[in-house]
Length: 260
Image (tube, rainbow, N blue to C red; front, top):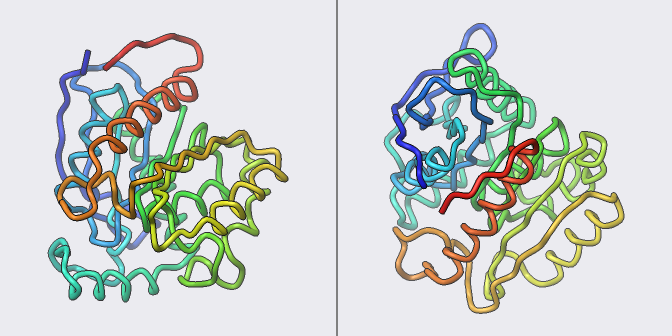
């Protein structure tokens, strides 16, 4: 059974002099729920990311999708076009490790102070958001981190992956007692098999509890039904069920919840 939810756009204070736009969705009740941070794709807080945020909330979580571009881009949501992608890549390269962590910590604090989130925290990220989620898991405690086709984890392709590739920070996930689920498509041109092997090897060597799921016929962006050319319903539905169970076990450790 899905829970009734309420959703709205909010402004979250970050440090003392900044405010960050975010999309928040949560169960429409007075109970205390775990918090899940949603890492947006390259295109920002699109309808797709807002839909995911609402789907997560219906499972019983305070779900918050921060706008990580708030320091550098105040425009509308980017379109799924070459121009939109170019603007997204430009802003991605303007992110900083400190800024991203400030944003995520502010979102978690907001969930606790405004909605009495119960302390169990997870992060879910897609593409760029998966990249951000992997980095964040090396720096702070998440009970569960789910990365959907997070790129640039093994390379120095973004501001967050410099001076060292994020895969080299994997031991931080163990230090912060985290666990990871990584989703990818077997035909993803941005995450070749060698990258998946390197990520899995790093997680294994760091003794991080993890699972890697590769859908052989899926490509990059297979979860996004707003892009028909890459959407894979079978892979999306399978991944969603895996994710639901993963979060349920990690974020509701003291109870058994059965929801569809």
